[in-house]
Image (tube, rainbow, N blue to C red; front, side, top):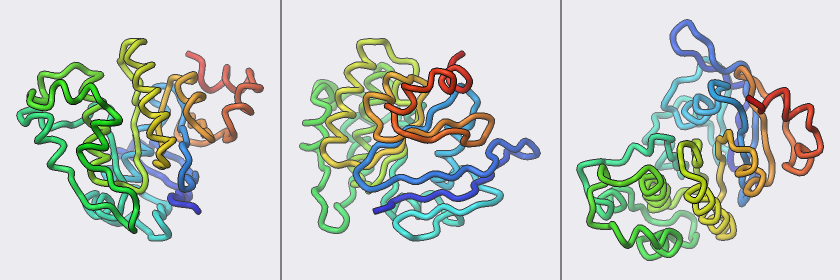
Length: 235
């Protein structure tokens, strides 16, 4: 089942066009990675899907519904979750309060994500539930941001640069948590620069370069194409 389908998406900031006809699909239960260098258009793609940046042209279908013209809160209510690279936590609220702000019932009879479930996935959060979110480290904020999104019981999560700026040990811990999330059946579209991170997690990958998709395939297929990795992913 195709949960998300993007067709010919074009987005600009003022007179500066960033996306040039992006098309991709995400199927229920899979993790798809959008790979690319800094400035390639990864974050703009996710922001456009979520309605945070209006697209100039193209269509976005979520669960068969056209959502390109909807407001972000309407897209969220439809079951699409978003975790920004900068986390966007309510820094003056405690971690527990941040999690509570996102609580929504499960959709379509699915297994619900509530506080016990997100704490089982991210057990370290138990240690700082009463701490203000603004006092957390970068890795802790990333965990809380993902947990908060899960509290909304989304059908699909857009996860922007989950490993960016984290120490190697924290990246490894994050990777293991996301593997557990995948095993639980959660559908995810991630944007990433870290090829190893994406390869270990994703079922399929798209490469974005200068706002276009020049390659799509499986991680195994990409690993057998060193010239593609060199051209589009190496700094």
